[in-house]
Amino acid sequence: MATPGAAIGIRARGVRRVFPGAVTALDGVDLDVAPGELVAVLGPSGCGKSTLLRLLAGLDRPDGGTLELEGAAEPGALACVFQDAHLLPWRSVVANVALPLELARVARPERLRRARAAVEEVGLADAALRYPAELSGGMRMRVSLARAVVTRPRLLLLDEPFAALDEITRQRLDDQLRALHADRAMTVVFVTHSIAEAAYLADRALVLSSRPARVVVEHTLDLPRERTSRLRAEARFARELGVLMQGLERSGA
Ligand SMILES: Nc1ncnc2c1ncn2[C@@H]1O[C@H](COP(=O)(O)OP(=O)(O)OP(=O)(O)O)[C@@H](O)[C@H]1O
Ligand SMILES: [Mg+2]
Image 1: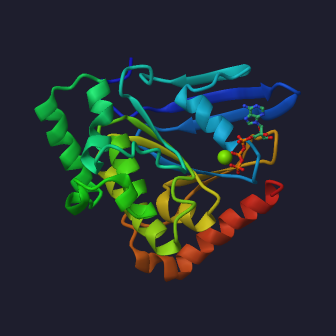
Image 2: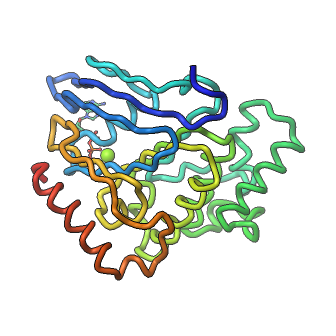
C-alpha cells in the first residue's frame, strides 16, 4: 500500500497503445519513476508523448503491458496541466483556482484560503480578483498551475504547458514549477520539446523513440539541485544539452 499523502511512483512494463487504423503509438514502453522525482519526457514530434501522458493520467487505457501507479486512483491524487490553460472566463483567478476544491466539496472558507495560498505561491496575489481575459498568456498558465496543485496532488502530469510562451516567461515558469515541486511530496512528469527546458527542470530526462515510442535514453542530469538562471550559461549546462541532443538524434528525431 502507498503511504497516504506520499508522492506516487510509476512502473510501466511493455506498455502498448494501438489506435484505430493500426496506428501503433506506443510499443514496449518500460518506465520507472521514483516517488518525488521530476522527470522530463522528450521525443520526436508525433512519437507518442501525449499518448503516454494520457495513459499515466488514466484518461486512456493501454492495449498491452502493465502500468502501475500506486494510490493514483484516490480522489485528488493526480493533476494535469496542458498547453492550453483552460480557464473559465467568467470566474476570477482565485475562483478558477478554487474550482477543484469546490468539486471535492471543500467548505467555502477553507477553499478560499487554500486557493489564495496557491495563487500567492505562483506570484499572482495582486491579480487574484482579475478575470482570465485580463491576464497575459504566462499569467494564465500560472493560474492553471495553481489550480493543478491546489488539491495537493501526489502526481502532476504536464504536456508541453509552457510551449506557447516567450522564452523569459517560460524560464520563470520553469523556476516556479521547480519551487512548487520542492515544497511538496509530489512526483512530476513533464513532456516538452525543448532540450533546454528538460535539462533545466528535470532530475532525469527520458527520450522516446519515433513512433512507436519506447524509452531509448534515460539520463540523470548532472547538475546541482538548486537551479538558477545563471546555470543556463555555464559549461556543465551546455554539456548536458549535448547529451540530450545526442539522445534525441539517436531516437530518430
Ligand atoms: N485518439 C487518437 N486516435 C487515433 N490516433 C491517435 C489518437 N491520439 C494519437 N494518435 C496518433 O498517435 C500518434 C502519437 O500521438 P501523440 O499525440 O501521442 O504524439 P506526441 O508525441 O504527443 O506528438 P507532438 O510532439 O506533436 O505533441 C500520432 O501518430 C497520432 O496521430
Ligand atoms: Mg503531444
